[in-house]
Image (cartoon, rainbow, N blue to C red; front, side):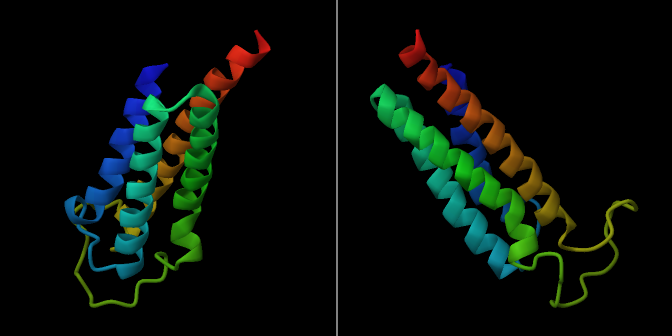
Amino acid sequence: MQWTGWALLALGVWLIVAPFALGYSAIDAAVINDGAFGVLIAGLAAYSMVAPRRVAEVFALFATAAGLWVASAPFFLGYTVWHGPDLGQSAAPFVADYPVPAIVNDLFVGFSVVILGLMRAVTFGAWRRA
């Protein structure tokens, strides 16, 4: 399932770009966390596509762990408590405050990475059981 590697790579790159594309670049913790883990996830995905199967399986599990952190980071790093300047009302009436795009993005990307990483790890592990 090579497509899972490409999907993980794309999610890692998106995580790097997201603070600037979605407009939450003023949240320093989000920018640093998303940038660092975006590089980590993209690197693990890229290397797992060319690595031997056993190494690729371990790297897929590392990507899964990174995805768990990305999904939980908004709550541990305090994205949910915005202390910055008032940026005004959100353009969308159902989006409450400024850190919401950061939280939603990290939850979506984090859980997507977890699912894809587990799929990739299970696929690599299946060859040993056969």
